[in-house]
Image (cartoon, rainbow, N blue to C red; front, side, top):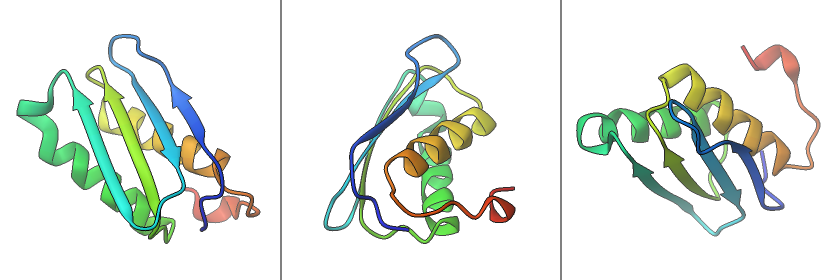
Length: 95
């Protein structure tokens, strides 16, 4: 999947995350999290797993995390990535 524009998903409410996606020349991940000391490695692993699932190799990911659960983070990340791409979505693969 190719990222062609800037997109957002999520909120800055407690237990949520605001994900910002932008085109880039490589994978750039920036995370600002209220629970980063405890779960920073898990958040990065989740981001990398979602990028791998969608075959994305060039993207800038900025996450403002307010304690989102892994399932919320995955949903916000996928929504922002899909909004940032002009490609057709293969919904069968989005499980």
